[in-house]
Length: 348
Image (cartoon, rainbow, N blue to C red; front, top):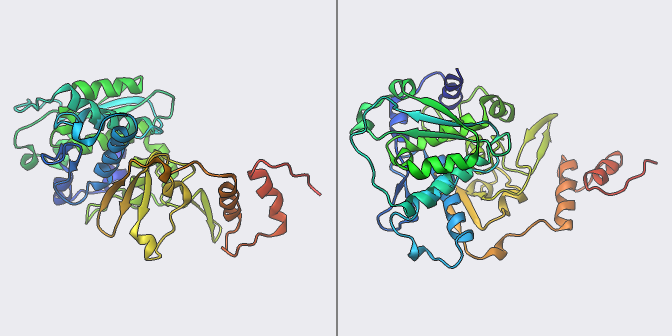
């Protein structure tokens, strides 16, 4: 039942075979840059780019004394499994796809390789756990020629869900079975793991328009809500800070600094406004959106990001109540502003 709901949430009532084919790839590392993930076709960048970003966060911020030149071709996969967002809500679950298909081809990966990629994947799953420590995982066995043979119906018929109690179990599973992420359905399996861990009802409560699937039915790109889910663990549809009141509608945005930031060329074209939280993440790693693709930007200069200063907090809270963007608020709202800032306010 839940897998059926996830299919509807992701794809809508039908799945175009061409779109599904483009999404059917594993996490594949470049032969030229062992820390870089390779995307084969358009569409799955909304999953691959966040995993790449978490992987870079681990390499840059959690492996001091090492440089990218130290990473071997097999030194990154274990980080990608740890690159799952740390705020996904839900019980620990593991999805096995193609469970009954014999594996004709197994990837032989070194322990180091499986360790960087696994850390990235598990970070990403962890941010979607509802209960502390709980998480979900998706896995698939390799199948020779599956990219040509597999269709959406076969894929969903062969999915199998297993529950895990701790997020550490997710990382251990991926570390020992990295082929699950590397084989032809690895990207989809990780995505289904995130959604199962988060829970369909929790995703639906955050997405504003449930009539549109998270993956575009014609072009195959992921929605902003799906990008936000992979980056922050919350499937909100907007990139500004907190909520904005537009004509009486509460439009949900980003509620706190995330590990990974997000910026977009669409802001330069004045199509949207990216808030402070996304522009100033906890780590100097950003996913950058354009009209057609997502790219990851990063730096080893930590001074590029910082916690909010008191004045920045005050400006952000003030903007929440300045719904018309006039730099003024009605005097009756002053007490609400002071309360939001945890300042003493005595009613007159």
